[in-house]
Image 1 (tube, one colour):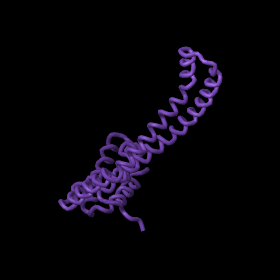
Image 2 (spheres, rainbow, N blue to C red):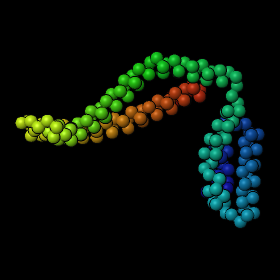
Image 3 (cartoon, rainbow, N blue to C red):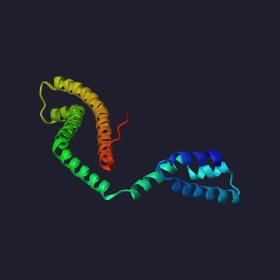
Image 4 (cartoon, helix red, strand yellow):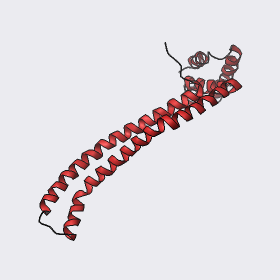
Length: 183
């Protein structure tokens, strides 16, 4: 990417800022290019070392918005955080605990079923009985069932973790300023 294309993309990405602020930022990056060219670097090497203009703009805009935060925005975020805390505590916590309990108990059942042949062999050593073969073959069936339960729980656990992370990101976006509607 050339210097002009880099600066053009950076300028486009910084549109929310005032013209004066954009000019200051672009002037700083012009200086990066002039210093780099004096050091013998090519424009492509300088662009690579600076990174993506869109990413630079996102970081600069995030800093700008933090600086522009007013007492009203902070108060609104605080109230949103308090509201979410009560909502999460009273509405979300119960089902989340129930889901965690289900996942943990299913893992425990799968592990116990998987270990059942070992338990039957131990029981046969301690208390020999005439039903050893029946118990052993039933424990093998439970072992297979436990294997399938554990495989299923692996997917369920990954799905639950992914959903939990998405829910946390949703909460953070609400506290940071609400969700933006795309219409």
